[in-house]
Image (cartoon, rainbow, N blue to C red; front, top):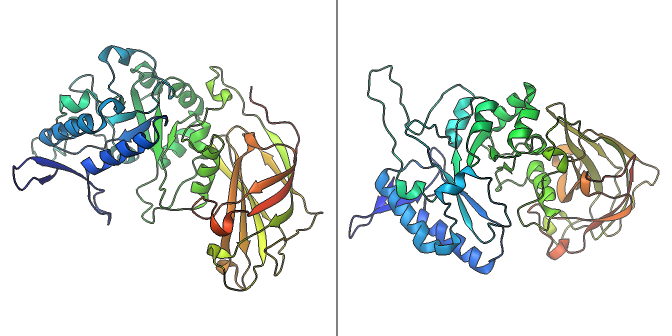
Length: 416
């Protein structure tokens, strides 16, 4: 639940992640932070707040009161009658906070949390009326939902059973899948069913609980099914997070991009393929690792990686350039070197350029800068690629860092 006010004994909802080393934070402080952000960015696309709620009813009532009093008109409160209609568009929800949580249709309606969805992989089924193990003969514990909070919620997380059941559900019902469940569903040739479901409903994926180092899974496979939300550990700037940054940079980093039109077609459609040839011509103003000003001249080389998917499986391929010694200001790589890639799904595939500083041992090579660009955004010809630091920003020593590349396609990348 949380704490109690030492003066009047009122409930104080607290947010934290159990069984981890993260600190606790007041629910009220999170809502105040969202309110400040929306005050500074009133035309922001909607902020979706996912509530994995383990609080008792009194604490839920306080949460509902804090949401309404702090956010006011910035909180989207769906009318009951609107739940039978198609979901509102991001444009209609600009400047709003939208809640995902529990809005059950009836007492037996099954609810889905991240921990529940992860347990699904082990066939551990739980519901909004959570049943504890009855092997010992104990009475099942009932987790109730405060009507005050339920009425503020748009997205109701529901248990996945079959795609037929999912498509028949109200459009505000959505699923959450762990990364292993995503792989499992795609292996069972259910990709097209998932694509169809995502044309009218929302779904979300999240990292496996086994990633105790907070590493990330590649979001490419989830994107290929039309999944709208691929949750990542944003505190870990690894390859997958850099890929995610490149995907959303195509729309100015506003947090939303249009789904590829091929994923909105009712009939099962083969992904568009293409052959890509890339030449790394030169670099400009490449900083030292970490952007430091002191130290030896760098020995840069470029790793070119393609993150793709094919027949329900992730496909990753990488190639590297030669090393240019003692030149970070204007390195020139071998013009005759061409790097060829067969793109299996050009609608979701992403190409990543990563600059490394060569050291005596390969494991000691140091990251310098990177850039990720969706294949659908790439164009033929000689192109300048802006580079970003490990935190996906361009400032200080990274202000002018770039690559000059030559891109050739077997066929142009044009959306249908």
